[in-house]
Length: 111
Image (cartoon, rainbow, N blue to C red; front, side, top):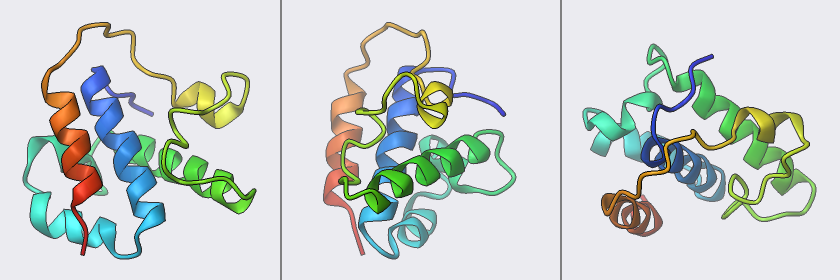
């Protein structure tokens, strides 16, 4: 399984997975509205990061099933848990000013 090459992409995938579990129809909406955007190509089944995205969604769903909240589920992952170990952030330590804007967009977009 491929892992995101940058923190920015990892955050986009994590927040998309959380929002997908939180809001029914969000994934379909994102595919229609942003499917061609380079940041959201992982939504396509044939993309190298799609399996990582599916694992992130599964991780969020498990937290929700245990009574937790979808929002922040990927960020709050326990380092010792199997999905969290796979979902750990890439070692890219650079700060990207676009990350905050992307997170605002994901928080405010929905069907």
